[in-house]
Image 1 (cartoon, rainbow, N blue to C red):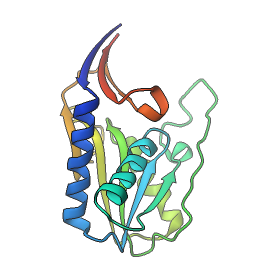
Image 2 (spheres, rainbow, N blue to C red):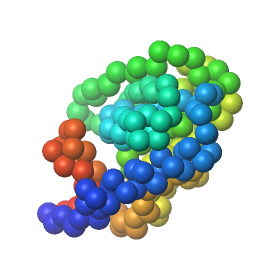
Image 3 (cartoon, helix red, strand yellow):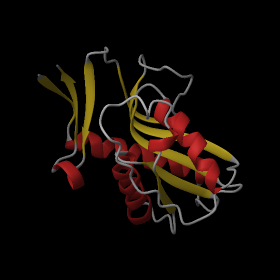
Image 4 (cartoon, rainbow, N blue to C red):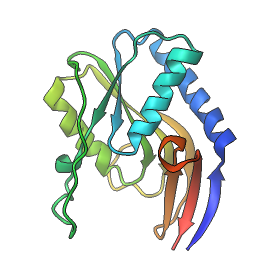
Length: 179
Protein backbone atom coordinates (compact mmCIF):
# COMPACT_ATOMS: atom_id res chain seq x y z
CA UNK A 1 0.00 0.00 0.00
CA UNK A 2 1.38 3.40 -0.99
CA UNK A 3 0.29 6.86 0.14
CA UNK A 4 0.75 10.10 -1.79
CA UNK A 5 0.07 13.46 -0.13
CA UNK A 6 -2.53 15.40 -2.12
CA UNK A 7 -2.96 18.23 0.40
CA UNK A 8 -0.84 19.14 3.40
CA UNK A 9 -2.03 21.03 6.47
CA UNK A 10 -1.33 24.47 5.00
CA UNK A 11 -3.19 23.65 1.76
CA UNK A 12 -6.17 22.27 3.70
CA UNK A 13 -6.30 25.50 5.72
CA UNK A 14 -6.21 27.65 2.56
CA UNK A 15 -9.03 25.60 1.03
CA UNK A 16 -11.14 25.88 4.20
CA UNK A 17 -10.82 29.68 4.10
CA UNK A 18 -11.73 29.75 0.39
CA UNK A 19 -14.80 27.59 1.00
CA UNK A 20 -15.86 29.81 3.91
CA UNK A 21 -15.56 32.91 1.72
CA UNK A 22 -17.60 31.27 -1.05
CA UNK A 23 -20.33 30.48 1.48
CA UNK A 24 -20.35 34.08 2.72
CA UNK A 25 -20.61 35.38 -0.87
CA UNK A 26 -23.72 33.29 -1.46
CA UNK A 27 -25.41 33.32 1.98
CA UNK A 28 -24.24 36.59 3.59
CA UNK A 29 -25.70 36.51 7.13
CA UNK A 30 -26.78 32.81 7.16
CA UNK A 31 -30.15 33.86 8.63
CA UNK A 32 -32.03 31.25 6.57
CA UNK A 33 -29.10 28.89 5.98
CA UNK A 34 -28.26 25.69 7.85
CA UNK A 35 -25.06 23.63 7.70
CA UNK A 36 -25.52 19.86 7.94
CA UNK A 37 -22.48 17.59 8.28
CA UNK A 38 -22.95 14.11 6.84
CA UNK A 39 -21.96 11.53 9.46
CA UNK A 40 -19.35 10.42 10.18
CA UNK A 41 -16.54 12.22 8.29
CA UNK A 42 -18.41 15.31 7.08
CA UNK A 43 -18.89 16.49 10.65
CA UNK A 44 -15.19 17.39 11.01
CA UNK A 45 -15.37 19.64 7.93
CA UNK A 46 -18.71 21.14 9.03
CA UNK A 47 -17.36 21.95 12.52
CA UNK A 48 -14.24 23.53 11.06
CA UNK A 49 -16.25 25.69 8.62
CA UNK A 50 -18.66 26.83 11.33
CA UNK A 51 -15.74 27.81 13.54
CA UNK A 52 -14.06 29.73 10.72
CA UNK A 53 -17.25 31.53 9.74
CA UNK A 54 -18.03 32.57 13.31
CA UNK A 55 -14.55 33.41 14.62
CA UNK A 56 -12.60 34.64 11.61
CA UNK A 57 -15.43 36.10 9.51
CA UNK A 58 -17.73 37.25 12.36
CA UNK A 59 -20.81 35.46 11.03
CA UNK A 60 -23.05 35.05 14.10
CA UNK A 61 -25.22 32.12 15.13
CA UNK A 62 -24.74 29.60 12.35
CA UNK A 63 -27.00 26.59 12.78
CA UNK A 64 -25.15 23.29 12.46
CA UNK A 65 -26.54 19.78 12.52
CA UNK A 66 -25.28 16.26 11.90
CA UNK A 67 -27.16 13.78 9.73
CA UNK A 68 -26.76 10.00 9.92
CA UNK A 69 -27.59 8.35 6.60
CA UNK A 70 -26.74 4.74 7.49
CA UNK A 71 -30.21 3.26 7.03
CA UNK A 72 -31.12 5.52 4.11
CA UNK A 73 -28.34 4.17 1.87
CA UNK A 74 -29.40 1.90 -0.97
CA UNK A 75 -26.54 -0.49 -0.18
CA UNK A 76 -26.87 -0.82 3.60
CA UNK A 77 -28.00 -4.46 3.43
CA UNK A 78 -25.14 -5.49 1.17
CA UNK A 79 -22.42 -5.60 3.79
CA UNK A 80 -21.21 -8.59 5.77
CA UNK A 81 -20.37 -6.68 8.92
CA UNK A 82 -23.03 -5.31 11.29
CA UNK A 83 -23.81 -1.66 10.73
CA UNK A 84 -23.02 0.95 13.35
CA UNK A 85 -25.23 3.98 13.03
CA UNK A 86 -24.05 7.44 14.01
CA UNK A 87 -26.21 9.96 15.80
CA UNK A 88 -28.36 12.43 13.94
CA UNK A 89 -28.34 15.73 15.76
CA UNK A 90 -30.64 18.27 14.14
CA UNK A 91 -32.47 20.29 16.77
CA UNK A 92 -34.17 22.71 14.40
CA UNK A 93 -36.69 22.57 11.57
CA UNK A 94 -35.31 22.74 8.03
CA UNK A 95 -38.65 23.78 6.54
CA UNK A 96 -38.10 26.58 3.98
CA UNK A 97 -34.42 26.90 4.94
CA UNK A 98 -31.38 26.75 2.69
CA UNK A 99 -29.50 23.58 3.62
CA UNK A 100 -25.83 23.01 2.84
CA UNK A 101 -24.79 19.36 3.05
CA UNK A 102 -21.13 19.04 3.99
CA UNK A 103 -19.04 15.93 3.40
CA UNK A 104 -15.32 15.24 3.11
CA UNK A 105 -15.27 13.23 -0.14
CA UNK A 106 -17.81 13.03 -2.96
CA UNK A 107 -17.30 9.65 -4.58
CA UNK A 108 -20.25 7.72 -6.10
CA UNK A 109 -22.96 10.16 -4.95
CA UNK A 110 -24.85 7.49 -3.00
CA UNK A 111 -24.26 9.14 0.39
CA UNK A 112 -25.70 12.40 -0.88
CA UNK A 113 -28.71 10.63 -2.38
CA UNK A 114 -29.31 9.06 1.03
CA UNK A 115 -28.92 12.45 2.73
CA UNK A 116 -31.53 13.95 0.40
CA UNK A 117 -33.98 11.31 1.59
CA UNK A 118 -33.01 11.48 5.27
CA UNK A 119 -33.30 15.27 5.59
CA UNK A 120 -36.98 15.14 4.58
CA UNK A 121 -37.74 13.88 8.10
CA UNK A 122 -36.92 17.36 9.37
CA UNK A 123 -38.99 19.38 6.92
CA UNK A 124 -38.83 20.49 3.32
CA UNK A 125 -35.85 22.78 2.63
CA UNK A 126 -36.28 25.61 0.15
CA UNK A 127 -32.92 24.75 -1.36
CA UNK A 128 -30.14 22.20 -0.87
CA UNK A 129 -26.50 22.72 -1.79
CA UNK A 130 -23.48 20.45 -1.49
CA UNK A 131 -20.02 21.35 -0.21
CA UNK A 132 -17.19 18.81 -0.31
CA UNK A 133 -13.50 18.99 0.44
CA UNK A 134 -12.61 16.44 -2.27
CA UNK A 135 -14.55 15.74 -5.47
CA UNK A 136 -13.60 12.44 -7.10
CA UNK A 137 -15.14 13.50 -10.38
CA UNK A 138 -14.79 10.33 -12.48
CA UNK A 139 -16.34 7.99 -9.92
CA UNK A 140 -19.99 9.05 -9.90
CA UNK A 141 -22.81 6.50 -10.11
CA UNK A 142 -25.50 9.19 -9.77
CA UNK A 143 -25.89 12.64 -11.36
CA UNK A 144 -24.79 14.57 -8.27
CA UNK A 145 -22.29 17.43 -8.39
CA UNK A 146 -20.99 19.74 -5.64
CA UNK A 147 -21.84 23.43 -5.50
CA UNK A 148 -18.61 24.06 -3.57
CA UNK A 149 -15.49 21.91 -3.85
CA UNK A 150 -12.12 22.22 -2.21
CA UNK A 151 -10.16 20.15 -4.72
CA UNK A 152 -11.01 17.94 -7.65
CA UNK A 153 -9.16 14.63 -7.74
CA UNK A 154 -8.89 12.16 -10.58
CA UNK A 155 -8.52 8.80 -8.87
CA UNK A 156 -8.95 5.46 -10.57
CA UNK A 157 -10.99 2.68 -8.99
CA UNK A 158 -8.25 0.94 -6.98
CA UNK A 159 -7.18 4.26 -5.48
CA UNK A 160 -8.77 5.68 -2.37
CA UNK A 161 -8.84 9.24 -1.07
CA UNK A 162 -8.20 9.46 2.68
CA UNK A 163 -8.91 12.70 4.55
CA UNK A 164 -7.22 13.11 7.93
CA UNK A 165 -8.49 15.69 10.41
CA UNK A 166 -6.43 17.05 13.31
CA UNK A 167 -9.30 16.44 15.73
CA UNK A 168 -9.61 12.76 14.82
CA UNK A 169 -6.37 11.66 13.16
CA UNK A 170 -3.81 14.06 14.63
CA UNK A 171 -3.15 15.97 11.39
CA UNK A 172 -4.87 17.84 8.59
CA UNK A 173 -3.97 16.14 5.31
CA UNK A 174 -5.43 14.41 2.28
CA UNK A 175 -3.82 11.30 0.83
CA UNK A 176 -4.23 9.22 -2.30
CA UNK A 177 -3.89 5.60 -1.17
CA UNK A 178 -3.14 2.80 -3.61
CA UNK A 179 -3.54 -0.85 -2.60
